[in-house]
Length: 169
Image 1 (cartoon, rainbow, N blue to C red):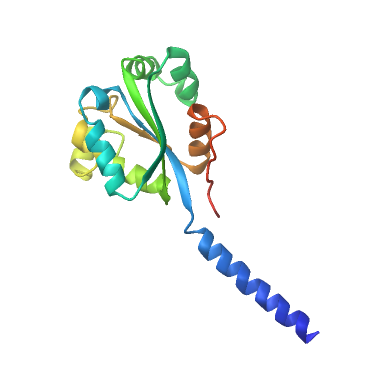
Image 2 (image 1 turned 90 degrees about the vertical axis):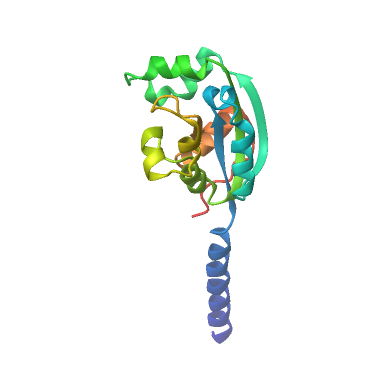
């Protein structure tokens, strides 16, 4: 019986250690440099900020999105009044779509890009990407997944079959 108790103790220690290590695992998020980021020549600056912030760019592609692609990707916003202008904006020029990876990638990327409203970002997060390169709420230069579920859905939308690292908890 004593050996069983020791075995249970070892298993518990290994389980706790495993959970601690899992919290340090990398995760992936989707990042998009939107048409105004590309036309404003911010792509190199944004890419440099990404790399200097400890992210790795796992894969990327540049393309001009079709209306049906944008409509499907942003379907959650379809009932909002800004949806038609969002479609026009996202189809107005090429975008750079990237899968970023690092520990805490989703939250860190969201922090790095700053608030959705660039006017607010310029005041509250002056060193954020949106404060650096945008002028208004609608044309806000970059996109970032807002949760593990969104990251998984968005990465697989543009990169079907690409392995997504989900929330380790």
